[in-house]
Length: 165
Image 1 (cartoon, rainbow, N blue to C red):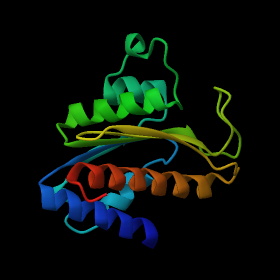
Image 2: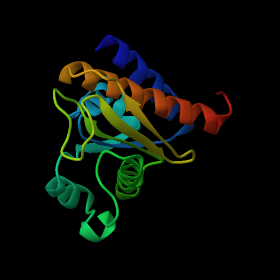
Image 3: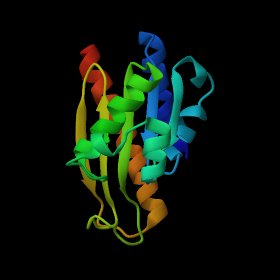
Image 4: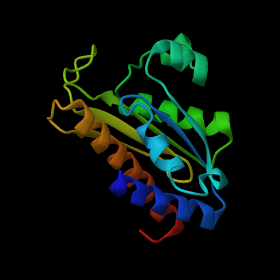
């Protein structure tokens, strides 16, 4: 976890320096993004919370995203990742929302995405979404790769917002 912890430390330093905060919605990472962030001492200064939004029940119960908001959307898409990033940001009153949704493996998901597919989104002063395809069936390896990509995207958005990137 040392590479991810170093990235999380960079995220934390930037958030603290700007007085910003973060909320996380993750799915196929299973809480790894949040665990990495809170592993850094002082995370309570910027990490407001997060949830593992793994099923429709958790989406409805934890993010209050009902069937009407899902009309025309499906999980494991950039649009869905953006919806979750915006929702966790608004729900927690955070400066930034970070969301991940995908298929970690060893098989694909019920929507037809192969293992190693993830969509990651950041909502905040800079909003962006990406799709990642690892072409790897290793569940744990994908979880680590997805978490790293999520922190990379967040750092890139923060750098763009403050003009350093």
